[in-house]
Image (cartoon, rainbow, N blue to C red; front, side, top):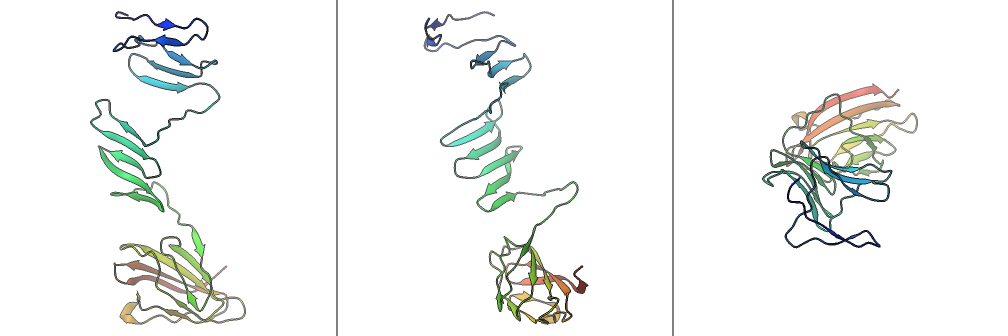
Length: 224
């Protein structure tokens, strides 16, 4: 390979002491820059592809005090951005499509799931006034222990869909259920909770930016 430059190496430490200013360290195809006593880290070009390889037993870390950005060879397109104490963003055709947030992640556009998606069920606490976090408990369950009224859900976001299974206990009930006026039902009439022991009702709602509109109801279901 032409245009090779000699390196000045310290004979005792075997470390490079000097590379002339403005010059490059030139390696031919499949010639590797090998680092570590066990030849663990290797950087090379095959003639077709470039590789950074950790072939030892350790991990490969990429550290930055600000952000890490993966870009195309001409720097014209961004593939991913990793912010210190901030979002990780994945790009498609130079546009951010998935970004992590302090509470989860935001997807821009359509999210397709090949088989199924599961929303973990979260138990609500029975009380005379039931609190419901729409973001943290989109799929909720409540075992009644009081005559309860559902307060307005917190963290409401336009377009959000939430559901709750409300169960009567096997003994000690039955209990009644009321609803804050932010819940809207057909004909503006709130449902009557099934009063049979060990039966359950399920309600689903969609937030339109102002009210939670009921979009589904199934009542008088067995719990087992």
